[in-house]
Image (tube, rainbow, N blue to C red):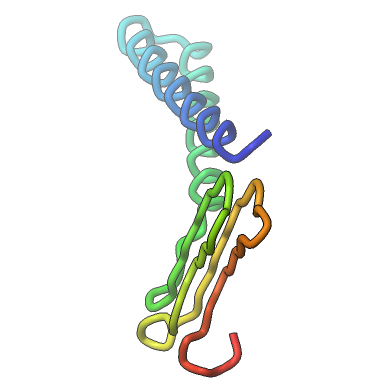
Length: 118
C-alpha cells in the first residue's frame, strides 16, 4: 500500500474514532451504563493510539535542516532536490520518488555548489 493510501486510511480511521467517541459520550450522558463507559474507554484508547502512531511516523526536520520531498513522473531534463548548503549549517534530507528518467535526463538529490563533497 502506498503512502498516500496509508495517510488517507489513517485520517479516515481517526475521523471514525472521533465520531464513535462522540456518539458513546452522548449515549453515556443520556443513560449511564458500565457497558457504554467501557466502550467509550476502548474507543478513546484506539483514537489516542492511532494519533500517537500517526504523529510518531511523521518526522520533522530539525531546525536549520532542509527537508525536500519530490514526486516526479518523468524526467526529461534535470531535477535537483537541494542545491547549495542548507542554512545555519544544518543538514539536508531529500526524498525523491521518480518513475522514469528518459535518456539525457538526470535526477540529483543533493548538489553541493560550494565546491565541497556532497
